[in-house]
Amino acid sequence: MRVLYFAWLRERIGLPEEEVETGAATVSDLVAELRAREERYALAFSDLRALRVAIDQELTDFDAALDGAKEVAFFPPMTGG
Image (tube, rainbow, N blue to C red; front, side, top):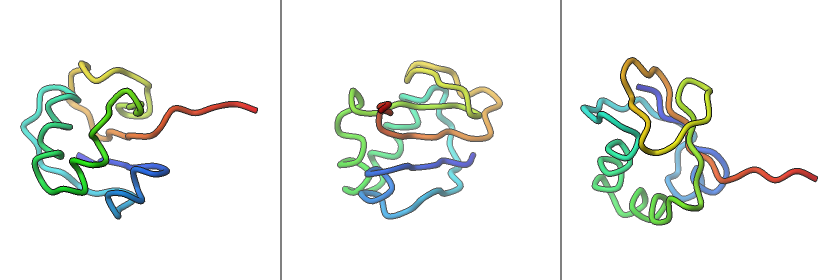
């Protein structure tokens, strides 16, 4: 699965994207796997209230199933102006 990181997440993790092999059933499960990898992931995903997620370019929530997902993107909330 392709995992994309935007804005300060990319800076904290040090990658814009990566291919991840996962057995995660939900986005929350995927986040738990990523947090367990290294401190930089744990820091980036320390406050999920400050993050949004999209599966295959559709906004969703952290309880969403990953069945058949090809891409998951994490990013901070967007503001207009």
